[in-house]
Image 1: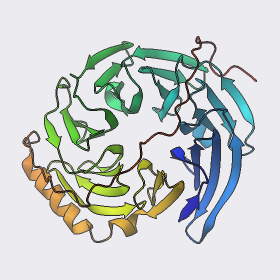
Image 2: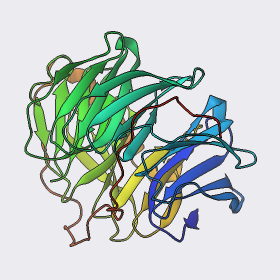
Image 3: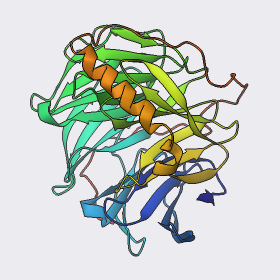
Image 4: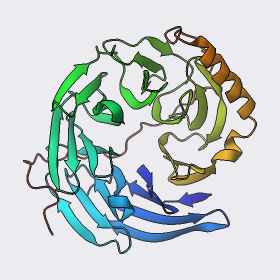
Length: 354
């Protein structure tokens, strides 16, 4: 399934229980679509949420509300059924909001262009944690539920671990001399995988974050987005427009599974039932890939890789690199299209009533 969004998209998110998907666009609009396997997607809402771009979108409150983040420093709450504005936090950050990530049913995390990560309680409508974790934009955030820790990546080339219980940055990696753009936790919490500007995947061992344990080459251009398929494999979206199935320990690019021609992949996400993989790109398209179909023929390979990974046991830190890219690199324009400056604002009450 394909949807022409008409503008460059920056983020997408699937509803937690219904066949709905939301996208945030460069012109500040947010679109909501209903999809089905036997009909074309239907646009339910088109809302001009921000005067500047809409960089982030997330469903909260069991899918009754979705939030948007923008370079105007605000976070907006919208009703999913009507599109009505519920509340707006006008000064959520002092810099452009770049990422929104769900942590639990009642908490979300936001990251800005100045390297600040905040955690919000959506019931109390209040900021409960704030971390000055980085010196440059927050590119991605993921959550380690068991340890109540956030993993953040940044354009400053470092990875941070933020402890929610102690409300402090627990540790930070050494500078990698490469922008870290995406992050997932794998191998049952033992490995943290980061995508980079140069196309390398950096593998960190949990508890040993100062330097990466492995550096896996294989993507010809930047790895802008990652999603975990299972504990041994992930799906990557790259600047060359190719979506790839990747095995981790052993480190191998299994094969390309989808593409957006030559346009950079901006974001990937799974539907709530994991039937579809959603992708957005600089070609202004939202594509919904049937996951079973795109992975068809790779199951035997995945099973073999999983068996090999199991037999590795404690040899996780041994590197197994396939440096041959599946497609040649192509010259593309830069990733981001919104270069507007966000005005600085002081923090106030969360989601002040409109």
